[in-house]
Length: 93
Image (cartoon, rainbow, N blue to C red; front, top):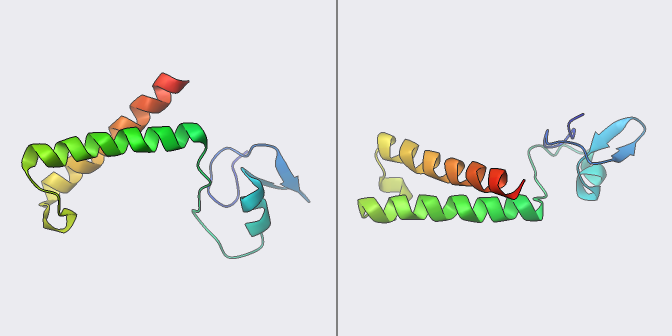
């Protein structure tokens, strides 16, 4: 069952049938809050890993200003970040 706030897996926080992934999101149920994430330590490690991959890509093309990236460069940057994130989560689990 997903968290009603961020759609990640609910982790046992429940009140009147509503489910959440964290106490913070449990407090937000009933308020207009969407897509807020309380990252776990594994998700934080994965995000940092993905950021490293994205940074390496930017270094390889000699560009650090994201606003100046061409559409194909932006896509490749995102694929590096997301790929690194996913790779780290697989490694941790």
